[in-house]
Image (cartoon, rainbow, N blue to C red; front, top):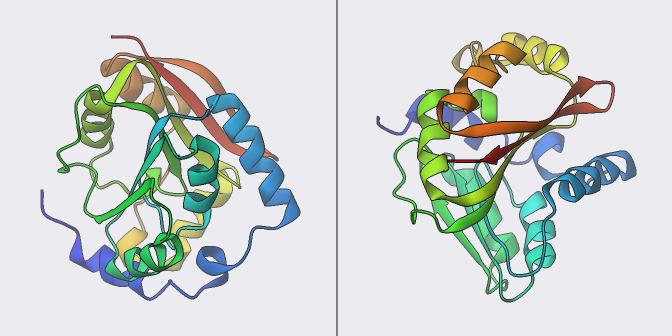
Length: 205
C-alpha cells in the first residue's frame, strides 16, 4: 500500500488550521488527561503516536514518559511532520517519521502503548493498520482510539469537509470490536458520548 498522496496533500493544507495548531483548551486538556489516566501512561513507556499532526499531543506524551521512555510519532503529511519536528526537535525521546501506519516496519513487541488521537478514521485500511500496530505491542500493551468529539459529530464533519476524507469514518461499535478482537485485543473501555470518543483495548495474544 502506497502513501495516500491525495490525503497527505489535503492535510498539508491544514497545518495552520485551529484544530491542528491551536493550544489545547482547558476542556480539551481535561479530556487528554482522562485518556492518559485510562492508558496508565508512565515513565519509561514506549509509545507509538500515529497521526501526530503538528505535535501538540507529542509534547505532552514526551513529558509523560520521561527521558527513559520514547515516542514514535508518525504522520502521512509532510507539512504536519515538518511542524512536529520543529516543535519537538529538542526532545531526545521523540522520533518523528513520515509514513503510513499500514506499511511501517515497527519493532516487534517493543511498545507499551499505541495512542491514535484524531486519526483512526483516516487509516485507509483499518484492519491492516490495527494488525501492524498489534505486532509492535508487548503482551498486555494498550491501544487507545481517542477523539474530543463523539463519532456522530466526527463522521458528519468528515462527510462535509473534503472529497478525500468523505469515507474516513469511525466504524460502528460492532465493527470496531470485530477489528480489534481479530488481532487479539480485549476492549477494556468504550465510550462515545458528550465527552467524546474513547476506546481502550488490551493486547492479549
